[in-house]
Length: 331
Image (cartoon, rainbow, N blue to C red; front, side):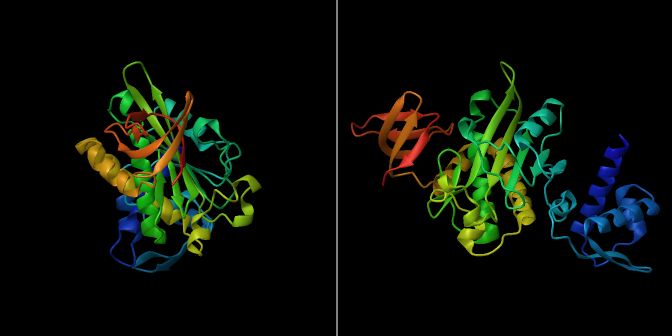
């Protein structure tokens, strides 16, 4: 309980510096905003200094952040975060087996909606169909987000498409690159995969308890860091942009974009998301092969349904609904 109180004070102090329109914040103002004593403010400032934050303290003016650490920390991610709930309960780890597993446990323990798990490294990261996801240390964004939407269970896959749009928008804003989406959850740049998205449910027979969205992004991974089998099919934001990308900024923008899209979805439904998703889709209008558990379907991808199901028109003009498959673009 005491640890949670201290964490809440720290978040309030970070928010105060994030939202400040003045250069300095007085110790008394920070104490009022955080609901603690000036001594407690000083202790938290000292803890932030130990993390690598540099403060300038001026008598009768207060504190000002003058530099932030190079390494990724929860406090550094929170500094500048402008969301109402996504990422506000942030669990940061140096190395984990899988952020999805941690988020799944937190969701089961009734963690708040928007709780986010971030790790510097995953030793057992995974993607769709339980495939291994390469997650080298200090190079990427490996995170899982807990949502608790009041929607019917069959509509849960729509959240994967919402996340894909949010990630694409964030990549565009931060790097200037032009990513594309390959249904249902791969984000490509120049034809190579840079991001995978995995959505998992905790549900009862008639209701969703939580949806856990896992997002893995190759951010500053170097060409030589990819396993040989991925060299020709995977890339990273830094390889494609030619420069190092600020991972904390990317996380913040993803959370902000995703929250905005999620709230739009809850208010207006899937249709506006559908239009955005299709505008980024690399496969729409092209010939593709969909490999399902029951066989292959070849044809032209014509779009997605209101439920996010891929539509393929075969050579005979028959429309196939694709719920789950590996997609190969043929032309």
